Amino acid sequence: MLDPSEKGELMSSVHRSAELDVSADVAWDFIERYTRSEVHVFSLCRSERQEGEYRVVTLRDGREIWERNVTVDPAHRRAAYTVPHLNGAEHHHAEMRVEVDRLGGVHLIWVTDYLPHEIADERAARYDDLFAELVAAVNAHGGTMAKTVNS
Image 1 (cartoon, rainbow, N blue to C red):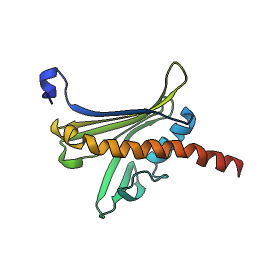
Image 2: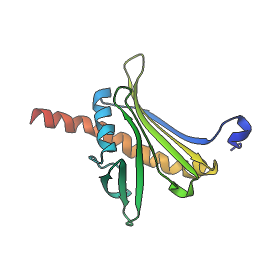
Image 3: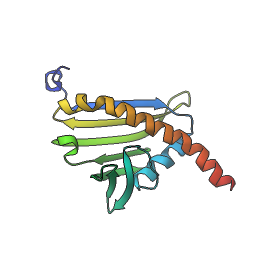
Image 4: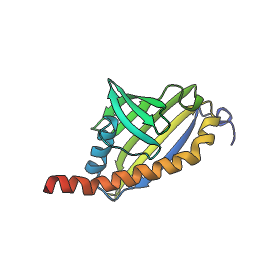
C-alpha cells in the first residue's frame, strides 16, 4: 500500500459497507443498543457492559477493550467511538452509520481510522469477519423486533 501521507491522506482507514435486509429504523435500533451494550455481536467477545461513556468488551481470553462513545446521533443514525491504543495504535476512531440510498435501500457503513497507517492494512482481513457478523446480527434484529412487537 502507498503511504497515505504520500496521497495527501492523513490516516489509513478500513471501510466496510453492506446493503441490509431491514429498515433503517430497525438497523439504527440495533446500532444504538450496541452502543449501550444491550446486544451481543462478535464471536470473539464473551460479554459487554457499560461503564459511563465506555462500552467495555470482554474478549474470550479475558482481556478488556474500552470503547469510548464519542457520539450517538439518532438524527443522522451515526455512532462514533474510539478505543485508545487498540492493536498498538497511536490513534483509533470508528463510526457505524445507517444510510438510505435514493432507491430506498438501507446500508450499514463501518469506517475505522488508524495511526500508524500500517495497522489498517494489518487488520483489514479481520474487519471482513467482524463486519460479516455485524451485518448478520443487524439483519437478524428485524426478526427479533417483530417478535417483541407481536408478543
